Image 1 (cartoon, each protein chain N blue to C red):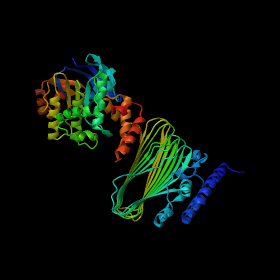
Image 2 (cartoon, each protein chain N blue to C red; image 1 turned 135 degrees about the vertical axis):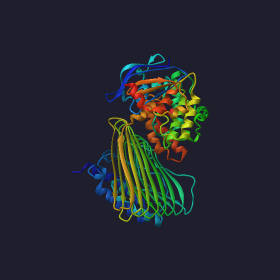
Image 3 (cartoon, chains in turn yellow, brown; image 1 turned 180 degrees about the horizontal axis):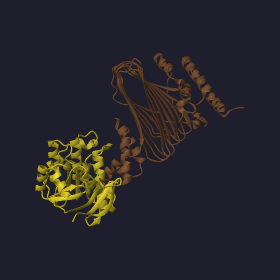
Image 4 (spheres, rainbow over the protein chains, first blue to last red; image 1 turned 45 degrees about the vertical axis):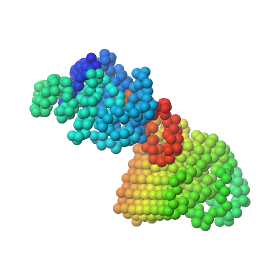
Length: 250
Length: 387
């Protein structure tokens, strides 16, 4: 098993948000975590990525059988955990290609594999950029600076393509995207989906799941998973709304 | 009782007599004498002066300095250049007075409607132990276009006291890079006076990396409509370095635009000072003035005093200013960490990026690469080899 979350209680600033969450993810699977605002979706993403503001109260998270919560965010990343941000951060003054090569080489160094020099990396990056249909013009620009909402999300998926994580958590990747940008981002994710990795899609809306078909859908309400099923559950949610599951959770 | 400073003044006086003894040009000699009188009467500024509240130059005042020379050979000043020199504000302080008294003049004239592709570069470095007094006059004649580079790379405990007077005539375009990367023991004072004509463009980037104590006074005047200026800069300090920038941007006429983006990176026990005044005079309607001073403190012992000041005497203007002093953002650090960068590397990368925003303005590849290296060398990791 790639990821196992057991009875996880976590929160922020003393407020408990996740109240006993369980989740099991295997390689080759795509899981959708759906839920209304405030249900704890974002908290789950941030706890898995290791955001310093979130605290784990109790429970366990095993990643490849090891305690994920013992690792710093950068250690998690180098071990193959990736989170695509809902609001990607701008890094003025640092070009996308500088940043991506640095991140890539940090991972390679950690794995004891060969690092790439700028020329080699540029070729690698050009290949990867095809995944999200990004032009090399974006490589020279500062990370996310002056990018449109859609470009930022594509850039997140480009980073995922470059870093080749084993576990990718996409936090509200569909938010703020028009239909064309959504299609490009979703197609990118589909190209990266493989039997060697797993993807967790955290989303409020069913819309994204029209493009990326999940193997499992988990519905989160008030910090717990209240309903689980296959992709048809997302359709049902779309029809009946979240009140339906909130009621079921009580 | 003979005071300590009186002893020093008499020593400069001897040097001054030697210099003026050789001065053939009566008009210039007269100017030098007036300036020296001012210096003798006022000495170096002290923290009692409002403009020098945070910058104590006693270290400069108390040392022995031999007057050095670059060997600029300039027989005499043309009448119009002399007129420019006469407008130099030598009475700004004791430094400017001393500069004019000992000024070693260099004149650059970019002829009317001429585009000079090759950057015009001045190396204004001083050798250890010497005091130098370069005074550069640049006239970009109407419709001309050029790039001016002033590099200060003084060695050891030197004292550079530089003045630059710039006239950008109607519709001329001047790019100006000022790079101060003197030794950490050096003392530096510079004043830059800029006058902008109708429809002219002046775009400057001022980099301050060196010096034990450095101070730069900038005064830019819009004297005809439709001109636009950028007065940007970076100070990046460590150890016990002290760097002070005082700037005045003076909108005296309507419809001019000014942009000022100064950034500071302060580590260890360093100290930065930014004082930026923007005047919008009564008749300067249609002014657009933007000013920003952002500071990054990398250590608990570093300190910055920032004071952006807008003084607006006209209602029909668009002005904005702001100053920040802070540390690296947690959210930015977290983002980089989730991409596999450890805490120190993430901090270094953000610091580099913060400084790079200014360095990236520099259009001369050789200088940009050198500054890049200088900045990367100040970081605590091998980031320089990794990006």
